[in-house]
Image (tube, rainbow, N blue to C red):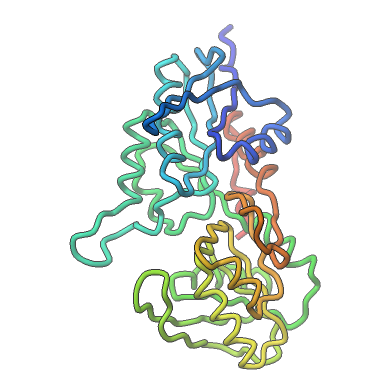
Length: 314
């Protein structure tokens, strides 16, 4: 009788913190790998154990710098060249997802290019969480398991036992997500409408919906410079909100983000650990919920050909 292909886990260097927790919840350990760095900045990953005939899961979020993406591509290629049976890229944060279309002339569609690169490297399956745009799944010709962070955020919101909740979206693009949360939690909904003067810089911001005396929870898939998020929170407090919290799956938190959050009206920013927080900065308002157990469970179900639909709360 033919045996089921064994499973092995590996990680890129900058996602080791999350991969370690994923394999702990799965009940195994990380495989041995190394990276040789050359003086000109080039590097070469290497598997230090056999992966022949194995189903290989490589955990790597592709947050900046670009090295994280390229390291993942090289590891996928190395696994296939070492005769792995299947290679699955576990990408809790999928970088370049904001470049999902041509929003002005003569620009690239970065998300499609990343999808092409992963396919060219030989990936057999993608696992990711809260894509910036759902249609990115269609950029791939291999299965994509798009996991929702609502599985960890909804129970946390319920644990707060807040009255008079309103779910808010910082822009029109997040209306679908906010509407799903508001229906599930039986809460009212607020939509913020913004105009941008340029990338990462907010122009005018207005709120559509009842804000007064509400405990507002702003939802987004990521928080980058936190300009929109903090501006929306400050505006809602000015309009009479009782409190403002924010939930964002991916804490990109670049530039002045940490300082903006610390000095804003936001009482709490809840994020996942798809991207690690920076060290030596003020994180007193930031609460991190781990996605490790969720990914471990989904990996187990996918590996054993079981349904994962129960992981999609909303």
